[in-house]
Image (cartoon, rainbow, N blue to C red):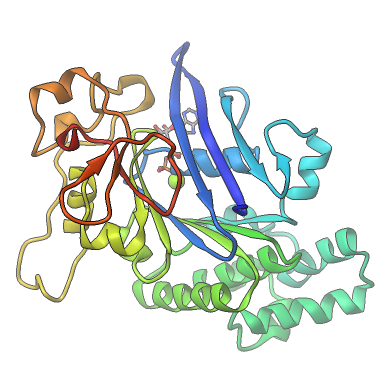
Length: 334
Ligand SMILES: Nc1ncnc2c1ncn2[C@@H]1O[C@H](COP(=O)(O)OP(=O)(O)O)[C@@H](O)[C@H]1O
Ligand SMILES: [Mg+2]
């Protein structure tokens, strides 16, 4: 049994008086103690997928139209809101790109970390403060005491993100969702935070969903990767298979945008064009207007998800969407 499995999830938004899908039938699962990377350019539906898992899609204008999200024997899309409150922040925690939007500026970091421990775990003030400082040390904060009594605006961006991670870990969640956790940080701080996440992944009994627009970041972090484009999964595979033999032209393009030492001196590729908004998703394969390999069929027919066989060029068709196997949604593999 996977830790989380999401099946045929569809999320719409009312935009300019029309209803349009931002997530269009997404299926994946996250294994126990595994890390799933969700990759794609900005606007592909990654955060909306995460919001759906937390049942935090703003309604209206958003609506979870259909699908299933199973977690710890529960169907998250069917349980009452009260039960969902017991899942959110406790069994599933989230870390966002900008900690300033989730940290409260008027309370100290210590108060914000300790308070949920008092409320949810019934700890007394002193035990909660001690555990908070332990968590601060665990996430690599060198002066836990000072940070405990600091207000968020007195800390650097990297330090704030560490506080957020400590808060997310406070209730020992089964699943941590990190949505662009390092995007707002400079490169060295980013590298240290990724190291921290990796350490947590190795030492905690926890699964992780790591969302990023940067395919380079999931290298060495994720076990499995799904690539999203225009609200759907265009390729999914174990990380190594995806990097070594990407199948979808979009994945190939994303890989070419990663700076690498071997390709030093070459110009970095930019994918021409932009991700369509939910209102303007083109017919056929949504990537066709930007695809260097597009054929006529790509303009007309929406490609199904094909299962890619282990080696060689063999491709068999299978729409079960299960992880661990290599799948690609592209007419080139028919
Ligand atoms: N509250 C909202 N209202 C209208 N459209 C939204 C809202 N949130 C997200 N969207 C649209 O859904 C699409 C996917 O967004 P998102 O999941 O945030 O992308 P990303 O992959 O960058 O995380 C975008 O086109 C975005 O404009
Ligand atoms: Mg996002």
